[in-house]
Amino acid sequence: MLVLENSKDIDLMRNYYRASDMIDFWYFFPDASPLERLAICFDEKDYISNRDFFDSFESYRVDISKSERIIEGFESDGSTTDYVELFKKIKKVNENAVILFFDLRGKATKRYERLAGISVNVNIGEDVCIEAVGKGFDGREISKGKTIHERYYIPWFELRHLTIDNFHKYNIFEIDQDDYAKSREERINYLLSLGLHEDEFIDFIPKYYKRIPDFIWENLIQTVISQLEKNEEILTNYGYKNFAINGNTEGNECFLWQMYNKDRYI
Image 1 (tube, rainbow, N blue to C red):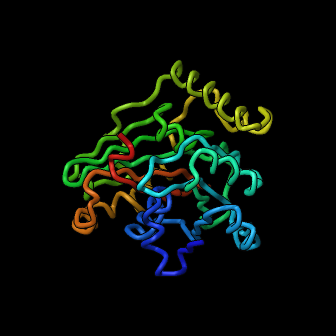
Image 2: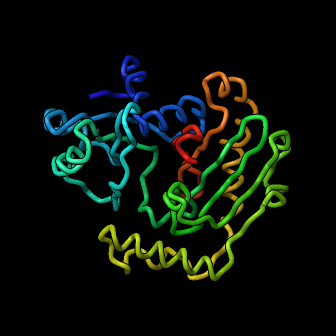
């Protein structure tokens, strides 16, 4: 196994897609990143040998080395998972697949309980485009191109003047109610496909779209957007010229926790 607490493991962990996404955001945006613990488990034997340690984590993702094609399609409803069975499934797809275990600060909510899913697409020196989905949705809808509820476009040299007072002047799109109804139906069907029951989540997904609350946008401006221009040189030096940052909300805060270059989000 590899663990974030071991500095010698960090470079090795950066060789994996999703581990690298989380480590890079933790590194470049330490005040914003909610990442607390991160570990990579290589196989069923590794898991069984360290079961108590891996079972102490709240969340997981399937990952693979950047030398291979990224693995998609292993969705979680957030409930307890049989990791031995999961390893059997992912190894059938690719023998080199691993499980990434992680903890974010605070108590994780269900994926339908969040106020927003958010993606910040950054072109250093040019612009920032923020795309979001609202209550009951999460960042999956954006990253997989399912839907967008709100979009904001901010020229790079206006970032320094951005506040919650002028934020909405940069709004260039808001979904209409007919299209929102379609996205809501797709969201419901997706949650059902995870094995959830409709009565668990239906009250969390509004029938009519309402804008994401300003306190969410204010938190995003303070924790992430305000740091972009300050970190321009170091981001560019590390090869982050065109990249995306994304995640969700937890409570009244933005919980963005991963970033990756544009070759991953085109």
